[in-house]
Length: 354
Ligand SMILES: *Cc1c(COP(=O)(O)O)cnc(C)c1O
Image (cartoon, rainbow, N blue to C red; front, top):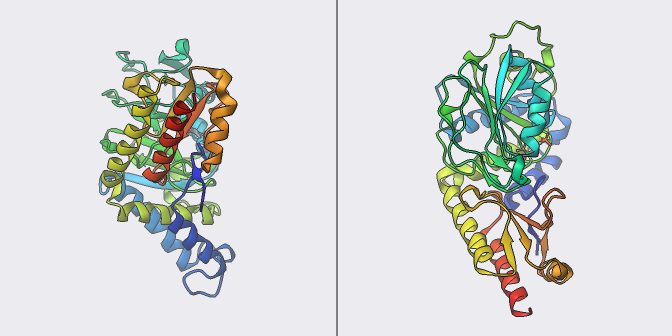
């Protein structure tokens, strides 16, 4: 049996996706060629790219509203600078909710002034700041919907009159949001959408062309839009596995369908963290993430005992990020509720053997 995979990213993918993907390495679409051996301009691969782009917009409810979906490379980390390269003329507003936001801010500063509208650094990012003001003269507002490392998630997004840009790397396609509020969304595929190697960007074309600087081709959204994500060779296999994962999600009832399962999983784990006195949650309750549940032991001296229990139960990837310590249960779309039940049973067994 496979392990219960709580890895934070790259992370669990649906088993049926892995099976289909492995088949395509040997023989893609009965072509008697591997997907890895064909031109990215072949009809078979162009069809993959087109279907993936269309399915992204369909699942997000963004069809026919002026949005484009791009599959780029360089990870979400390249989007930290690419967003600023394309959109920042004078000043941009950023909400700082953790490591990834801080990195986005650092890169944006290469291109102009950055106003940090609020930060939760004062409490090691265990909450989402609220009631902040976003400058109306900023070129855009940037936020991070889910803080993968600290286990916090934005439940609401500010209503702003300037373009709204969001790093949704670790919770895209996990919950229903009015995605049409956003002008640019980006996400590295390897958390909730596919394997490492491709990065999704969904953007409204009309926010482009407003900065005065020259933009090199690979950094230029307009060029990638015009070339339909094929300006250079795309990461074909990562895009293909992403397409398979999106098809899997579509069959599950899309975001509305998976959201129910994600809420169920979140309730299982957080109820146990709150009930069991041997554990304490890291994030403020109202800001808890349904994707990454962070928690610590109340008695650190029992770490070895707990670690042995979950490893014996076939659980993998539960150790927390070094900046929080403790544990992080990453419960992305593909993680079945059964795996969360196994973890909860382990936590209860730990209590019984106290
Ligand atoms: C993982 C992660 C990133 C970094 O993604 P890369 O693809 O490795 O560059 C950025 N933002 C968030 C929210 C993440 O979880």
